[in-house]
Amino acid sequence: MTQPGYTDDKSTILARLKKVEGQVRGVSKMVQDDRYCIDILQQISAATRALQSVALHLLDDHMSHCVVAAVQAGGDEQHVKLREASAAISQLVRS
Image (tube, rainbow, N blue to C red):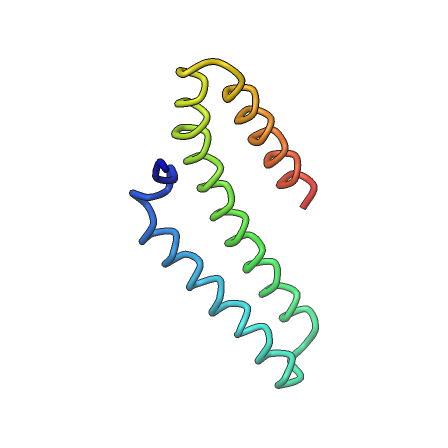
């Protein structure tokens, strides 16, 4: 089994996810503390953007690693990887 494209960036990605996790815990605490709705919504927006940033980073790694390798190899695998990437992009755009 080949390594994922993000293997070299794994520590960076995990650090970003840990930050997002902290932001989400912060939102939960804000709700528990009865904070102002707009402040909570701003924090949710920040956490969402941070998570989208991680998703785009992973997508970029996938495109430059997995998709490129599949296209270079040719055959059916290139079509599978391109469809996967297209579906992932579509899902990110809708979210």
